[in-house]
Image 1: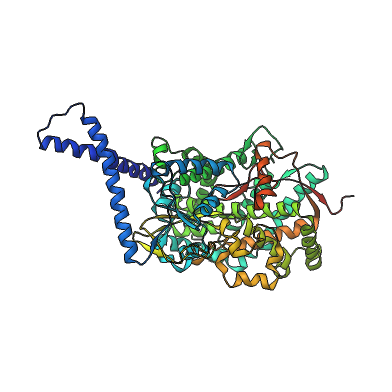
Image 2: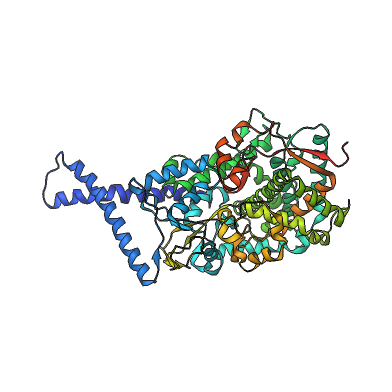
Length: 594
């Protein structure tokens, strides 16, 4: 399946190039021969003119068809970005540069404000490409209009070499099959496996206590990635990847990555490959449908994917070997005792498919929960009073005991902090769907801009639709004038909670609709359990700015910005998932410290 993905993107772009650059000159040549005309010096300009004319005709015809379909559906076109250069190339280049340097998604927000709307067609290189922060439109794509959308071939093309035949990269019957396989392993009994959480939380806190006793900083973003992947691998695959035992990164080390100081061991190699693939895929998305042009002779993800395979393939092989050995002696394990990996092996002998599904689940289990914990600790370091209130609730409910499932349910303030963190920093801040191969209409937009027409919007067939959870969850029209402020009380005050309960799709950190994350309760339980045990041992969390790499510090001009940009002391960044550039370096003090 992966090899097919490699071939498909090259084949697709070659077909596009052939139709755009080869067919028109060939038609001109045929006309010459039919009319018995001789080729002269003017044949080259004629061929170039034919290419331009054919492109112009295609664009005009497409616009004509879309205008007709919009009228038939009683809708209006999605507002288009209008650049100074043909194909909005100037806007595309400016946006690409701004996304790499400005505050997270601020360039998108500026576009929405410029055009006074919440859903826009960037129309880069005359290709429809929709970006949205509109709650009604993302709700339609995810839930109420679910049947009109899918992940689609555009995403499969970008992600095939990485996620392959996994749950996040498939649609329809294949997706339903993957989801039915995974669902039994996220039931209440499994997500409440607090003994497993305690095993890895205890190990992590022991490491933190040792670091704190020396008054040294620690990159918690890196540590949480290890904690979550070790717990997930044990829970779902019955095998501990044992990343917590590997060397921790040192502050301001010589080996730097976007997410922090990287180690030079096998785990560091894996994480760098894991992050590199996500970065490449993100750049593919920002480049648009022409991204294969830049990878025509080399799949940039290939060397990184090979490193990831070297980590995962032994797990798959061992499981398949164990299955074969058990079958040979007629041994069958009860279904309820099988791990997720063993369950996958029972359903297929395809090692590639098993690895792809394994990687999809690891991506979700590692990056999302690690992101959540990272930003919770960031806020605890910014707002010590909030951290103190969390700790007091933990002591009141749990004392110094290992928390139970019922204890976790009683921690209303801790849950409020988690939800407020997810609101401001959803682990997947930008996601994508594609309309099916038939046009449809999006419902009237929300009321972010009162002057915008309430008429439905026409969405052309097979059009990529990007929606930003982060911008929606910071939208003042939905959340009030304090939307950029970190205020856990909004999840406790009944009047403010009513704003959300009356419109639940304004908060979708775990997506919504039929593809809502089946692991969200696992993530809530794991994060809550870890925070309880952390707050039982530590009461002071301080940003270690002396350890933060210089390249990751917020630019001075951010202080003159608006909203969270003006108060950030770290630099939020995103590829497929959200992270803190350079890591989150923290010093902590134990409750028993003098």
